[in-house]
Length: 302
Ligand code: ADP
Image: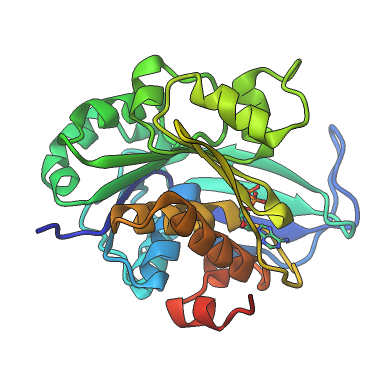
């Protein structure tokens, strides 16, 4: 028996957002609106999304011993995430400093802080949690070496899902473990090398599969997703919704997909469910604040 349906290994950030009339240039100071602080980071987002859906979800992450760390732990716990593997200290909590202008364009500085201090040693020390989860999901807002150590530490038979964001070249041992590798259009292009990637998502999926993962899922925003494995590429339709804010949609999709695959769902069905979760998430503002419960996903139209 597993204690957790899903273990997420990844980042936790405080997103500090200020609205401005115009984003500042070099050497310039501009006055903005009131500061808004939101819990974020791809790891924490995925964990909150899965827990909101009803998955027994644990997070392995590192936050600072500071107010932002407390904000994140509160958000995780109120969503029902098991936080005993969230480590504290070593550096300030990661933050994203975000300025947004009236057209919605933003400028972002990320200080990884404690996320950069989540080490392979932390992964090895968390061995019991790794063995207690059906499926393990990671992203790349923590050191790549930590993700590589995670892959080496996974018990035989534990499924591994990776969203390589922010994208960078991946070692063969990490690629080989992914089932699936989950990418959006930007991540697919970077992993394939921008030139010559072409415009056909099915072709990206086939070429990504040739890099070594056991399966690939390409998310296509309002166009849904593609699932690709040795048996070929299959399209998964999206749900038509009024999109208000797409922040964190990919994290909600990946969390839902990983949970459903771990529960034994067939990949296209799992991705179709994940697409409904992603669609529900874009109908509300924010990332973690926008994530639906299972009942809200069920209530979404076809
Ligand atoms: P990311 O947030 O990583 O860029 P996507 O934009 O591809 O990822 O979104 C992830 C998934 O969320 C999509 O595959 C889709 O299922 C769902 N989704 C995103 N945007 C929309 C939208 N405007 N309408 C319906 N579903 C959406």
